[in-house]
Image 1 (cartoon, rainbow, N blue to C red):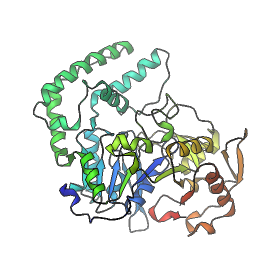
Image 2: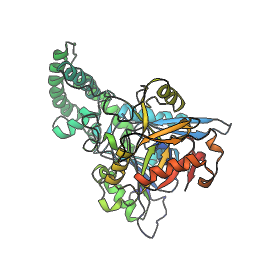
Image 3: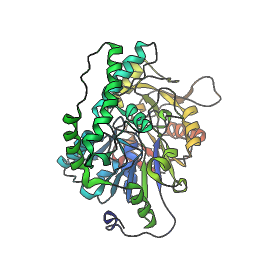
Length: 430
């Protein structure tokens, strides 16, 4: 038995594992739901994506305010004491970013120590991947192709490396004795490709030097060594002990590399369908899927957006909802809820219950709209008043809001969580 599992009491009864995934373009507020669900689980697992995703959790600070903590690679469960947090092999990891998050939490008095496990199989995201990200975007646009609006975090090139195999490094390689010789062959390939891309777009290029970068990678590897492990074996041991596992998806369903709005998608499998491959567990483990949907829609980057708004209303919602990327800081595009796409994704990925966020920014509008299946025009609903956090039960909610939630439920899945604000204490359980 892995010693990190020893503090957890064995559980008996039926397996009880949960997946939390976003059903739109990201930024739905998944971190809030994962943060709540972490209290009901023993292990929290991030199974896809990289530092292009951002989860924000707001914690009461004891003085009437709140502390805002954003994570990009760490599971949101790190904010719940006595939980084991796992970054599985389906994640591509920028070690510098991961260590920065670990250090930032330490400044808040949260020391992870043995509570964080990182897969030694996880692919490395390095500076050459970020350089490739920027150059590829420019080269594609120069050739008359589509701008994808990439975050520039090197995620796509890192996943491409995984497919190429010979040009990739995994986190376990950072603590291997032959790191520099391995890195030399890897960088020879990357430098050749990057030099060609730089020449294509008329930019200078300074090759990455293995002798310079090997010590940096080795330093990151030594700092991460206490956390590196075989997370597949760890999760199977946790399941055998009867522990409850929560799988946390990054990005969202409409950005899935296969199922999303291609080609304006991310580079990983973002839904519950990605859990088996991204975490190395059987499909049968996924028996509860919480889909998170915002009561309106936001999107960072390019791509189709059926219900997009512009002008004063979009600006107002953007400001009220704080719709600026957690990772990039870019203003998000804003639109009404699209129940055609949300409902399709909920059925496709097997959502068993919904969490609805983003109700507060819509409060006070005379009417709200959404796109529903079978209707050419947007459906209109009476608005609801401000002050939603004053309500303590679903039955107390204003009738227009209940009607709106009933429509979501009709076209997607049962609504079980209603987020009236962004703090832990502002979520109604139905």
